[in-house]
Length: 209
Image (tube, rainbow, N blue to C red; front, side, top):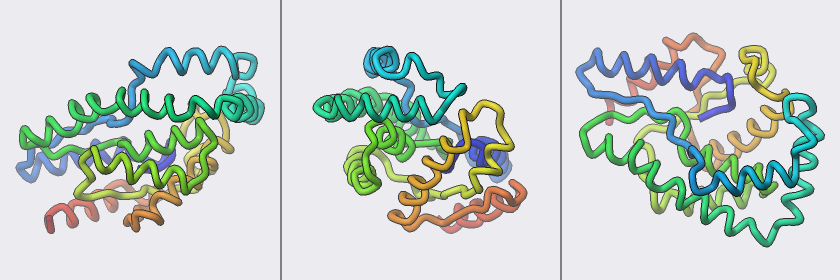
């Protein structure tokens, strides 16, 4: 896990090739939520709260309007979470649990950790709340055998991609990912290093399983 532009997808693709060279059947999956049941809620919230503020034009105005509006809808936060989680469970089964049952090594490029982070940002939840929800989710979903935080300065990630709304967008997420990494005591990969170095480190850990 890590912010946009930290190199997760490139590292996952390299890991898949390396695992297959070592005789493993591996699959890369983007294992966070693709909204289905939740989509009407998202569209309604966008229309009611932020339709006047495009996040790519003015992220600060966008997020301020979003947080102000969501604070007024605090009574619905629990419903939003329930629908989101119910929406996610079958997707996680199809993307993660089923391939594991079929003997695949599943490389998750994002997972339910990212889902809890996105929810925390949506409802302006404190890190402590996000971590409590993370523990709740882990009761229902497979926890990773290996889990890494790919750390990159937000400024570096921002320079790598053209589809990121703003530096503030990355900074907000970076602080929450760091809270997760600290809480879970995750090993940290330096996302500014060559992909090959991080791939070798993960492969060494994999061989110890």
